[in-house]
Amino acid sequence: MDPNTALIIVDLQPDFLPGGALAVPEGDAVLAPIRALLDAGDYATVVATQDWHPAEHRSFAANHDARQVGEVIDLDGLDQVLWPVHCVQDSPGAALHGALEARRGRLDAVFQKGTELGVDSYSGFFDNGRRKATGLGDWLRERGVESVHVCGLALDYCVKFTALDALELGFATTLIADATRAVNLQPGDGEAAVTALREAGAQVVDSAALLANT
Ligand code: VGL
Ligand code: ZN
Image 1 (cartoon, rainbow, N blue to C red):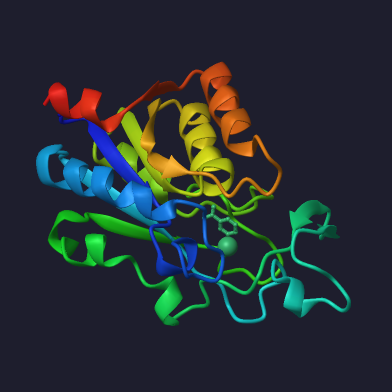
Image 2 (cartoon, rainbow, N blue to C red):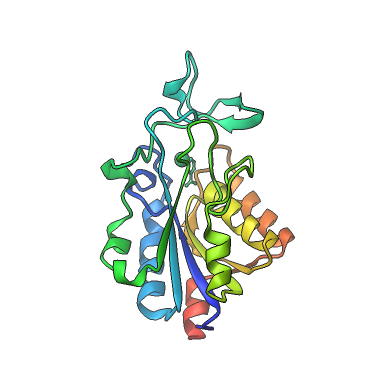
């Protein structure tokens, strides 16, 4: 792989996989391509994001009176989808998936997000209000990274917003289409995310094409 290209693995955590608290349909289908990318992709930089909420997080429906999962509320001036309780700090469902833990030595950094009670953070770069940066953007720049390959969960939320911010920050950005899956709260959300990413300037490829070039 080009030495200035980083692999960004978004939120590969048990709570987003089948059986998890916020299970992404077919979420486990991303594991094989991600393992292959880690094994054979020869990336100089591999970084993971980790959804990491306090138990009282305001994105959880259970932390509001008479609210259901999937409802949208105003949270401190931002539209907020209400989610099931998920990725609570230090809970098993919030751990990085074993596919990454087993290769911990290959992970150069982990950026946690969603730690502030009153604002959600879909992007690995900024919270949804862009009030704070996680440090990922500066960290990539300091390492000389110029392009990023983005995969993980979920395509229509954290993968989408991580890739959009990467583009906005000036990184050449590729979505690894077979290494991501969508929540699809509304049917078609996953396809809409791919369209939005293409329109914003992202390349969309399958892992096999990337591995064929290494
Ligand atoms: C995510 C919803 C809530 C994600 C995280 O990783 O896509 N989605 N928190
Ligand atoms: Zn979350």
